[in-house]
Image 1 (spheres, rainbow, N blue to C red):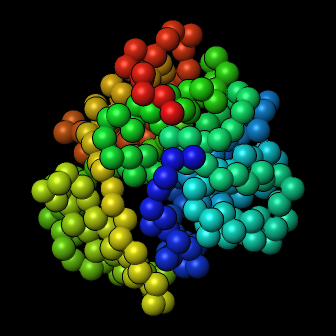
Image 2: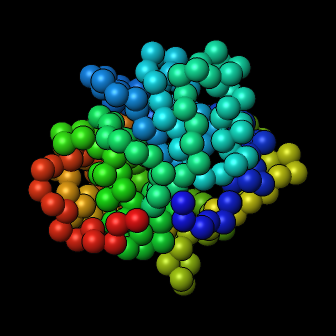
Length: 250
């Protein structure tokens, strides 16, 4: 597993409350499991926001996350929900999931790929996901790039969620990163994200040896914005061809 800074450890105790309002993607990812005969692999599984609904729907899940604190909360949440036996919790990250075998579905929800710093890491992560898929298997993920409206409304301002969490976004910094500050119940962290336009992501997916099956601008199947900003929801299928530009596999 690649070395990493655990940005989520400081907020693991409040992560579930912070994300309580984020539910629109759950039916999409549970739906992606239909027809799978092997366990569903979820990378960057966090505290189980997607893994637990998958297990409740009757699927076995291999839930991978690099954060010790987040995995511990996932274990507790899964036991509390009565699905602990269905979720195999593993230490691993997007570049090195640390899983053997091949599977029908790999899921990377909640914009987790934005933690990757550049195209080298993006292609390596996509190649790692591809290596976990049987031929014809599906990768599903979502990412985001701020719209001009997002920037106008939120740049440098604290946003108060109904959960009591506060967020402050600093978009398009000089080093190309986005910084999201989170505060809740005395817990704080700064998440460093690396957005890219929708067409750039779709090109990388194809370069990594996938066919893009669907590319939506939201979880209801809306169109991707013409300027490449906003949400991007991708379903891609592993092809039989050799990936062309993903030589930097982990």
